[in-house]
Amino acid sequence: MVEVEEAEAAAREAEALAPRSADSATGVDAAAAAAVQEPEADSPSGAETVSLRYAVQVGAFESEERARDLLVAVNASGFRARIVRVPESPLVRVRIGAFSDRAGAAELMDQVRRRGHEATIAADVPDEEPVP
Image (tube, rainbow, N blue to C red; front, side, top):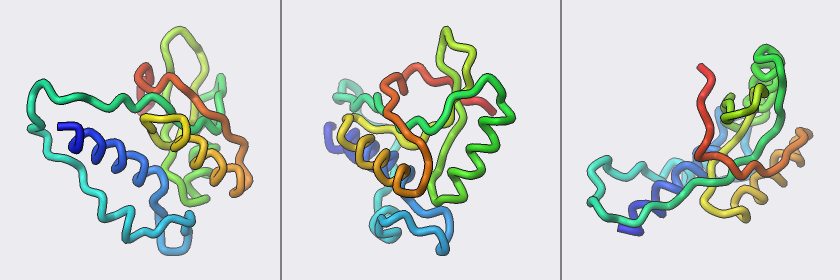
């Protein structure tokens, strides 16, 4: 069902915006963000899927250590960042969120910039490989 996929996309967006502690609000109502629940894993087959294509990228580095330093700083600002690689690139990237549309990513990008971090929109989220 389309509703299930939309709920899943909303949950990923809310997770990116959710504060990591009570002291680090991101301008998003934490109760509203927490109210979004993950859909059940057994969604009906044949359901339309929502492609989470866009993310906010806050850095790209040759050094995994530099990426981890930025990850710590971004998370301290109240975001939930991740470190990833994309195929055919040696760079390690630090990203926040996953969105089905560019507008959602742009909204988060503005919030990240207001917190003093450089940010851009990345459009290759399906190709990401998490860095442990």
